[in-house]
Image (cartoon, rainbow, N blue to C red; front, side, top):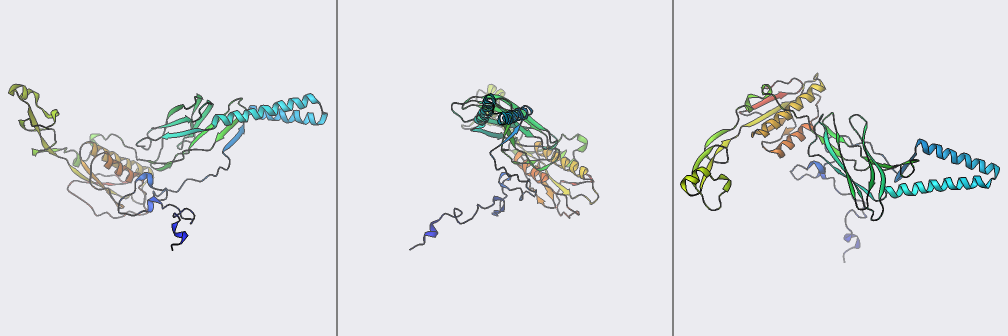
Length: 376
């Protein structure tokens, strides 16, 4: 007879926790959105404990109101005047109504954040925040949404006068990160001073997420483009998917109608298809050497931005590129997904204490030494 303990689901009552996705080793890289901050090589943000669902801060008018209530209450206690007791009761009821209405305004309001596809250092990135009112009958009034700017410490904010039941409001704003690497968004803070403006009721910070900031990518002038990337694509005398014309042949069922040569078809009286010539795209290996010990940090960041711009220029020009560092290689590839892998590697690059050797090379080799940029 099997023991009852064997039927328990693992992790339910045995104290086990789900495995960290960044520590799973199956020979394939773990996607960025599944990695923990420790796996990305950056310290986690300072943890704050919020033991109250709301934080209440009196405004300047609120302090005056509370002070007047205390003074009148003290006078009523000392004199025993019924009119003063009635005034104190009215003021306390006023405070109670203010708390109930402000809580009703924040109740069942949900936040959703829209993240940009790529964030570059020094370039404003567009973010989005959507407020959803999940209440069926009640409208949320006077909502104030704020997010602190991690670069300057200042905040961007938006005021929503009213969100109807089962309605939503979207706010688009920009943030600028001066440095590459793993950054932490400070979280969206939702507050309200509804209905009388006496108290500022603030909800817990929500949607505190890490974001990976890529090095700055800029357009390269012709003088900064290496000769290995200046040759462009070369046509081959064989059938392929290039831009040159290889041959003309009669149309067959199932062929792509976009390749029909209409002028020749009009003269021949039947559909004639054009076959394209194949193209050979250059394959470039960018070797990024570690900076010397006395290199300036700003110059290293500028050189990382150059390597990122070089990779974007090569990929968008149709070349296949590989970025090799002392930590490994990105592999040879093309396309926007491959560019994301290169930019991620550059964003997480850490400056070592001493330069490390690199043993790599190829026909079209571009060497960039960080801190002492010289392109070969």
